[in-house]
Amino acid sequence: MKNLITFFILFSSLGAYGFFLLSQNYPLAIVSITLGFILWLILMGVFKSRISGLHFILILFGIFVSLAFFIGYAIEQDMWGGYHFNTEISLLSIGLMLLLILPGVYLFYKNSNEPVLIAPTDKSGVFSNENSINQNLNDFQNNNNFQNEFENSMMEYDPELLNSYYQYYYGENDK
Image 1: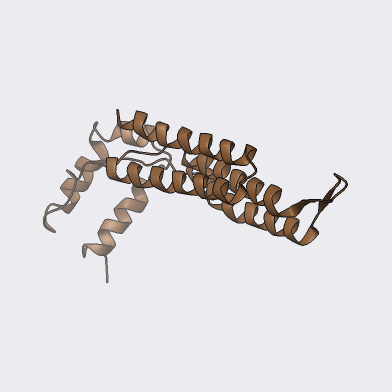
Image 2: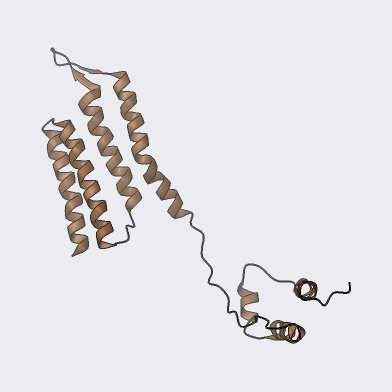
């Protein structure tokens, strides 16, 4: 039901945008698409819904706003029916489009390049005191539960490196 309400808001703002665009009321077209998008974001926050296609919606609505701005202000019709493009306003509408779609492009590339999270390992091999270090180290190296982790992990551990680490930091070095 929540998604139905939010989709209704999106499509009604798109419908109002199309109506105002076709009736040549360009400022109201910009206002309708902007208010519909803001109301949609507010309701998605209230419903605490995950927005999976936010980057596509940001890009699409940015293009719609810049298109209405371009048609409304950059194209002028003369008294004989010809059309003239105002270059300054055209460049301003292109800059507006770039600024409005930039967050959507950023979210698109950010979501596609997220790293894969690896679950933390079990902490059963934590050493409690210095007397049981060698015993725990041998248990750690010989434990079959940890063999699957070493075989399937992306990084392999050197037993000699671990042994020298524990000897140095737990006081069994020869100094």
